[in-house]
Image (cartoon, rainbow, N blue to C red; front, side):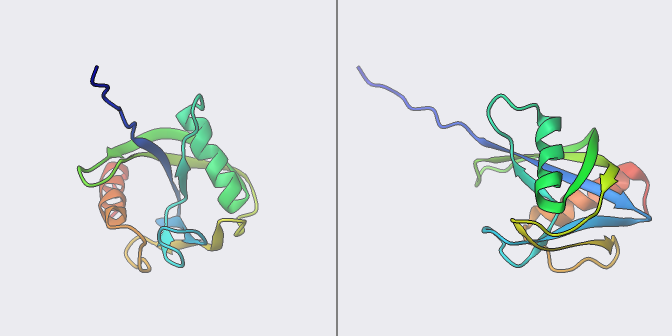
Length: 135
């Protein structure tokens, strides 16, 4: 009997935290994209609520407590097994600082972003700003 294998996609939570028309970015301390900037993100574990995962990632990468408010978008493409779930976040508490997987963290003006790690980052930020009515 011919058995077929099913390879599941990997689901990643991405968080956008905005403050005064600036968004929080992390300089990645891991591959892919080592040394480049991106939004905080990470894999969602099996049996983990999506909201809990992105809140956990922000704590692990930046040392802050956030609340996942609403989904900004879902992204995928045929060349990658990754599905991105992008969340708008609300700051709750803590001091923003780089931790184990980040080299630096900081807020950047949406109109003056550093070199970003992933091709999809600009699309995600652009669509998020349209939803937030940020110009």
